Image (cartoon, rainbow, N blue to C red):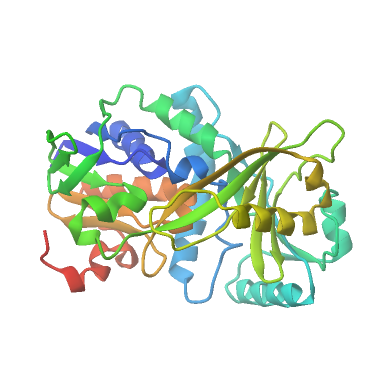
Length: 368
């Protein structure tokens, strides 16, 4: 059995794999020029597989539900290892509709979830406002998802970095990843029994077999904070449909609010656009009018790692090379289950067929 592992990528997936692999007895080295600074740092932190359920993606829903089930123990164990909170909130999610068409879309979602046996509560507009007084405007009712949680992604990343503080860290960018070997941008090589590729949107740039599989998907978010005298943030995560567009508002313990998220196919561009900021604020203000009184703290964009079928790739790409990438919007959500799957894979288990990396590689099979 191999005993040394190099993890390429210091986002929530890579850091979680490092932590769990060390706990399982592996000798681990992390390769990343700036851990905890990519899409995981930008994220809203929603743990919402039920809210984001979509017909045809039932296997992804099941994986997300399993990961949410793992989240309380994952967060508690991480807090114990790190000595700080992992930032988990279990207040649930409310989804609201801004107009009649949006209401009809939520009704379809409720019907679909009911057909799958997933717990959802249909709310009238009055019920929404009673539960979350900050919600106002022409809301046409909503859905309550008590089993969808959230996490403060930056608290989480801080906890993960503390938990793996003893792991050797190579603070350089990887230029090429192959079985058992990582070529760094400086020309140096790092070797191990197994390389785990968890480099998010950059995975296809440093592993040629994934160059046509993993793509960057840009997302912009805003960070706000309630000023003195303003209505405070909602207690739960609020997701809204506003004229068919999706917007979310995720509360933080310090009175902050994360507002997101746009989605663009824009390559590796991480600039924040005026149009993106305008649309996010306008849509959020439709369902939470008090947001206009908030302080605008930060505008930032990140790159999600997209895959052709929106499911991650987890498992052996070839002997000596395991991949854990392609999580798209679900990296934070799927961190616990992905880390467990990778550690089990290293120990000889097989991940689910629905996540096998080779499902997308027929067109580039045999490339190196």
